[in-house]
Length: 259
Image (cartoon, rainbow, N blue to C red; front, top):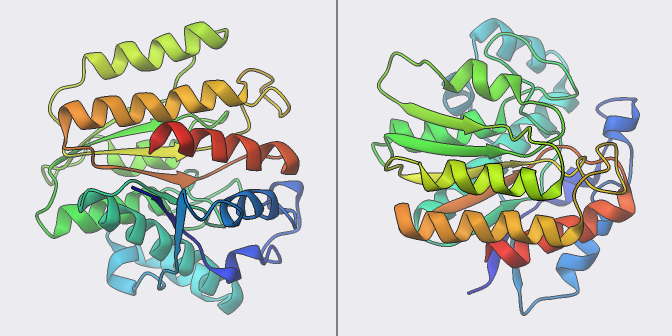
């Protein structure tokens, strides 16, 4: 089975923000490796998320504030749509990875920062929940920076949707991976696994912690425990990562464990 890669050519455009976090070229290394291995990956083009999809995760005032910049809105809605496509594919039993920009895990219901605008993870999970497909989800957020938007939108909900989120914090490579596995071992029944996949914990990035083989192990753990708990339903969404050369290698390494 090939991993489904959700990607749109418009994601290459980094003109929505002027900052190293949104610098041009971030996706080039990832997509170069993906496109060179058609036996492992299938690229699928998404559609933008609609207003109803986005408003499940965000207040109208926030939604309208993003809409005031048509270019930003186009890219943010397309990123959210990519996350929805990944979630739908995963629910049908195929592992998927959304190579999308802009990221989303710092976007809360009525605010955002960190060059996130719509919370791609929340939009995608709430889409599945709204359709009665899932009631419980698990998110592994292995970005260097805690996804406060994921927590703010998805935890302690009043609509019956239960979301468990792990932001690993153990020191050292072995301790980090051990924390992830121990958490997964104790998971109750959930309906889908999702990852906010930031690669800025990489040994060649800000976090200076995880090697490519560690990302393979993270992907493997997602595969192993999703197969035990929820019929293998699993997907990942790209978040952070600043070293443009390393992010491609690390994404590819994660996907090879993930599939």
